[in-house]
Structures are given as C-alpha cells and as structure tokens.
Image (tube, rainbow, N blue to C red):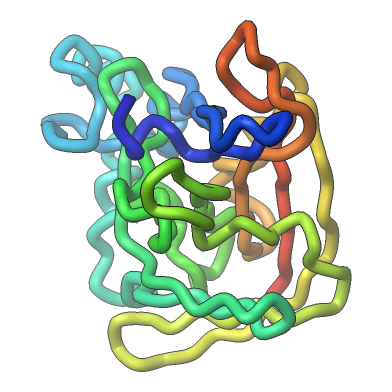
Length: 221
C-alpha cells in the first residue's frame, strides 16, 4: 500500500510499524455546494462520472471554480511551522481520488492542503491541511506529534507570495472516525479558520486503520 493512502502508521506491540489510515471522505454533497473540485478536473479531482453531479449544481459549481481561481484571493500555502513541536514542513496542494477520499503527499514529511477549499488567509471558511503520523520506511511524519499541541500555541503558515500568517490553536480533539464532522471540516463559509488533521487513538488491526482522527482547529491571530 502506497504512502499516499497510508496516512498514518504506529508501533504496535514492539513488532514494528503497522499501517493505519486517515482517509477523509469528501462527500459528493460538498461538490454540489461548491466545496469540491470544479467540473472537468482530472488528476486529483472527482472520477470521470462526477462532472455530471457538479454540473447539476448550477451556480454553486461555478462559484467553486471562481473561488479556486480568484486572482484577489490569498496565495497558496508553501510551509507550515508548529514552533511548540519543532515542526517545519512543506505544504503541497492535493485533491480527492476517484473514490472521494482526500489525497495526501507521498512524502510523509510534507503536508497536504485541500486545494478545492479555502486557502489559509481566505476571508471565510475552513482551510484544511492533512498529514501523516509516520511511515514504515520514511519514519515519523510531519504530524507525528500533532496531538501534543495545546490551546493558544501558534501555527505559522507561509504563503507562496512570502506572506506569513499566524494562527492560534483553539481546540485539539480526538474524534472517532464515524463521528468525524466532515461537513464542518470542509465548510467554505463562516469565520476563517485553519483545520489540521491526522490519525490517532487505538489501531484497529482488523480494519487496518486507526479508530480516531486528531483534529486541530486554529483561528487567525
């Protein structure tokens, strides 16, 4: 199983690293309301059958295209720093695979930004960054210690134009995967915020994945 789908791994019973997954499912309903990829997207976007669903959204789909390409919006994020954890990682744009799962970089030291949602620094909505815990071959990932963040700690995001944005951690939660609030995580509306996601909790050997997600919400400082 490639690292793109194996977002997180953990050590179990001294037997080495075993595979765990954080596969954030982006519901088709989010494509219809302007959160997902625009019609015609290929690599990293919805499957070939999805454009009909997007086209059925009418002006909502058009709004998604505008939001993704608006010249006046913030530049794409390039790096994320978590000074309290000693993290300094590259950020790369990602989308969704044909099954609707958010993709992540193959390099576990990098973090993926959901490019069809708001960018950090946007006037509204949740900017989503997701990353690995670790990998059997590559070792600890960028978000290996994400669960250790504390409320009030800074999250620094550098944009492609050189701007550095500062966010402050508001909450750090461990949420069971069935209860993950996907609609809220990928929300394009409301106050601007940054959402960081990785896996956590116990590893379910039968399912081959962690039972929970670690979700960090941070607000502009």
